[in-house]
Image (cartoon, rainbow, N blue to C red; front, side, top):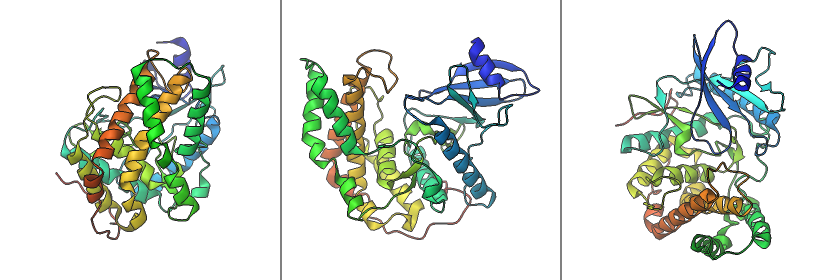
Length: 369
């Protein structure tokens, strides 16, 4: 074990012996490890201050979220496993290392697993229900209790401005993938302010959302197809349901790798997720939000492709990469998925034509095989 990592992990344990530390997950932002002691396992994570400029804000938000979800669970209104932060020997919910980096530790959800892609319809149904269940659980938490974790997050006009700046100083190449990305951005940018205009005109309202509900941020029971926990709440804050629903669909509907070339849009999975989400959410989601589920799906593909391509032009300083062209590959994947989504607009819009109902009050999302 790395001596520095071992010392950081030791800051969160007492009366037990650290046995092992191994990398955990495939996150593009934070560094995450599984710590194993002679008594338990827990998750150790470094908050990437280059992305989250105010790590203490992230921790204050997370503490508030943990408390709220634990109270919801205790009163029978949250059926998933809520996150639980560990306290350091200094009595804090974080540890600051000698380089000024903030680390946190949280309980490990035993008998669970992550999935790179959705494997079957039962998982897709549980994914949609669980996301709605999460939104319902946060619906009565005052949005002003959480500070904005990432200013400008999901603000597409701002990402377009950042792209324009990067484009103006980058060297134009003959790389066909770069040409393709530029053409897609030119084609779709007129739609880039759809949600910002809607917010300004009062057509949409913000509420607390996850911010990054990709498939890998849902933990499934290792023997079942049911979601047991939703993790990585660093981006949780005021936002639009359309962004969360769209990002969930984006992540779950493409059964290939996020940097793969053989893009396929699985419409059946899309429909299962949409119907399951709407059935669970009930009247939490208003008509305008429902009518713009397709737009959220389409524009989140555009947004992520744009961010990957901009990061590529800027030298890949935001998203983790293993080679210089990885972010370019990620951007072309998202843009091809975007085109596939746009081509099926009519079918996707028809998927939302279900009647809303009052949200259920129960311990968790109903599991239907």
